[in-house]
Image (cartoon, rainbow, N blue to C red):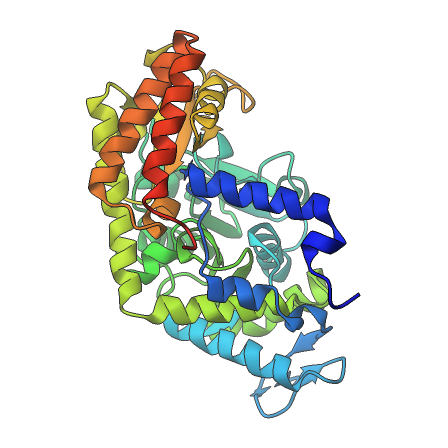
Length: 428
């Protein structure tokens, strides 16, 4: 059973994986939360580290909070090499972000956020986060999510005219509501976030400050976005997206909160950590510490801005009229098409995006007025500003074809997309 490969053991799954590889290689992934990790990251992710239970930590924390790095804190034996890898991941992450303490065990971004709440709050406490419909995340207190059910939630949004964060209004809301935790960070906000201002507001009202930088972690590392780490009490992030690692997450915090955070992750919310994912995180952190990663992060932003400019030249209306980061939010109302139909048309053309609400949208989440685009994955493939202009042309033609119900035109665009993608193979 240990000899045969996937093509022999399970041809159905093998063929589906092969088809997915072909789809991504022949198309353009423009969903801003998606990226392509390196072969080295994938090798670690598929390694024997998958096989080991390692409940606990690669260090021992005494009752007074003192950490002993020369003593294991595992509840299972046989973890000496697991400990080595997890320690490497922790130290690299601390160096990468300049963090006091890092927990690399969270399974994904949503669990990481929930673990922070569990560490710092009591059920029913008041939290303040960005409204999902205006760019926030489900775990920032949306009513259908655990965070919205377990806590008393106050939401802030963006200005109706500019679609920008209004820090004066956010401050007024915080002063009036007195939340115990203020969350900053977004999933569909195309401008830079002033994390220092958020932290100042939190301090002034006696709240904890938390930044969720899942989308922009790679940009922070690359120096093209303000880092929240020097200011915030706690920072969460996924390790994929712009950071270009495996699907997973981590929590960074001030030293004084380390014990609370670690206890909330394990045994509070999780059992055995996924050490194969932690090994892959360690590899991704090493890659992000290389000088070339800063060039990569800068190119993500250059590409997003070039794509935004080209889309506007093609008559598209963008929320905030551009972008400072990796993502673009397109308002399609002037194009006579919904986000749902645009997503389908672009998918038929070999371009993957996601339908998305725009601020103050009159549509529904299933059929909103916008689409969300991002440049991390195409930048990983080596594309630059000139390719962004070509991609904008593909998008414009596909939307026009969809409105005209011209399926032949969509197929022609798909062939053009495939030709462009062939010049930038993902894994060679």
